[in-house]
Length: 301
Ligand code: HMG
Ligand code: MG
Image (cartoon, rainbow, N blue to C red):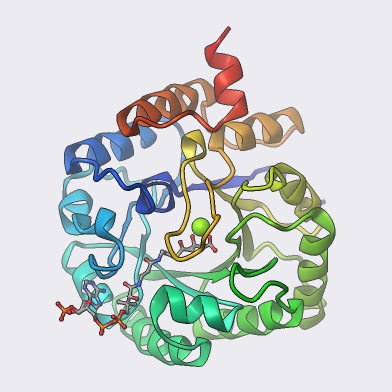
């Protein structure tokens, strides 16, 4: 008797844009987030307060966050890699942050220039400060199903890091298949390991963050429902990728995810037709092909 309600975390404005070469004007990003705010979504990852040398597309983080129309029933989380990012985010009145580490040592070095342990030390400080100001904190773990540099990643490493993040005070851990190589068997393997650490509870404080590089996103999400996972990250139009993960293509498209969930009888509260239109619009703005199969199908009707 798990819940029938599924929460979608729209990561298009952050994950969706961070790897795009073409720098979008801030006004377009603001329009993008404002449009998404009218669809029934309750969580929209807005930007990241990271180094603009590392992620040029996010250099207008403050400008974007400041100017979006914030609705009281929507969370607008932002990525924060260190205290500097937290301070910047807090100046803008951010209420929810996401910290991000990895189950792969090499990916951690490439993505945030420190080891996994160093990242946790850094995040301890970030979390202490953020909690003092009553911010909500979400945690990401990358490379749960494999790493672009190291290949196989032990599921036990994912489980251990999950435990650390929750004990530090993250309200939810989002498990990232950064390069989309997992199949349901692998995902279930990871979730079984996580369950060994939390044997007496469902995994309702976990989310799944699937990139759809190998077309496995929906299958992987389907396989996680039995574990009680009811939060999924996705990008409208299938935007997305990580510049420090070669071969990482877009997140599972929000359109495809909603079509699947509604078809299976789940409630999301999100209007699919509006999401489809936004997917078309943002892909046009980027001069990019729509990556959502559901979007393409519904738009050609
Ligand atoms: P570093 O070079 O080790 O740090 O980078 P540093 O402290 O030496 O600083 C270097 C420069 O950046 C300095 O500027 C700092 O001031 C500045 P300079 O003095 O040279 O002019 N700096 C900052 N500027 C703005 N905001 C900040 C900040 N911090 C330092 N917060 C650092 C370390 C963590 C900063 C860097 O590696 C970084 O920004 N990495 C972010 C990479 C990133 O955003 N990757 C994509 C997101 S993760 C992802 O996509 C995966 C996910 O989707 C889940 C999944 O799919 O698996 C979440
Ligand atoms: Mg991602």
